[in-house]
Image (cartoon, rainbow, N blue to C red; front, side):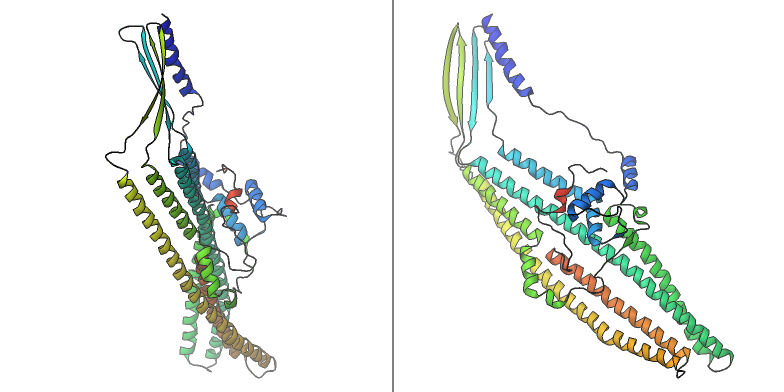
Length: 473
């Protein structure tokens, strides 16, 4: 009877221990109709967004929602709302959990053998595994390196969202300005048609001159219709980049203080761009962290040449006599010394090293190419400012003065105004190419190049770290 009670006791203890501190499964269902409704209800007037923006700006916002949104505030709103960031956050959470997994010590095992057929026989063996050669430390180091890579991945995702917001905002502002320029040109061409029709009526000019003016006016009408569609399309793209419905940005004002004056070529020198591309690019630093993880994995496989041991204290009850024993067991490395896994780990380390060098060379080439394109676009913009626009403005002022003095008629002035509008659109095209090239250059170095524009992407300083653990969706 006593032996039976002991058997029950020893069977109950591991069951109770296994049941302590266990987690239960909680289902989280996804209902498409509910998620769609939450997406449609997102608003830039969200008070939680106000708190998030103020934390990152470092000062309170005088009015919420702001009357005017710029690139920085729109980027922060995108980090708050855009669902694309959640994938990177999930990968980081997985990497954090992997550190816990890597540091977990192996559980001891217990073996219970009740007496059969005699109730006076009972064996209890406990095996405590002990890892040798620093295997646990190598696992932790590998997991920490991968966690750092996941942090760089999260910061890289944040930069990419900012880049998409910048491109969408630039597209929207340029499309709106293009529409304004075309509208001004339309007024001048409409006035030109009116002047020419009056001269045709009195027989001063032939009919083809009026027809040509009508054709140019029709072309302007078509360009305006296309520009209006581009404005609507770019507004939808801007809302999508932020992660809100189009209705959420209806009525808001957006601004870009330095839109007409991109950074000079002197402020973005080749050595600086090359240095930033090598040292600041998050994908390069992520590749370096992945190499460190491969290095730790190789150390782990090498340490596995040395077998782990198990200390096995035991207890035996037989015929009212108790016996205590202490055993030691290990695996004998006779048939293999882990050569295969070591060779695989070495190959993965070489692959990680090659991937790092490839990525480093790639970003240097991207930086040089982006700088060349930006320098060329900036030169084109400078020439448009200094030659075409300056010359046209001077001619327009002289013509206006001549009209006031009665030396020229309104039709001649109108022709100069149309030429000025065409030159303005030429300058606008050059500005568009320069700003697009600047965006590509910023992506190449992953940092803002406009003076006063700040967007930290360091994992410890990233705006993502100021997000709440669970965002209201």
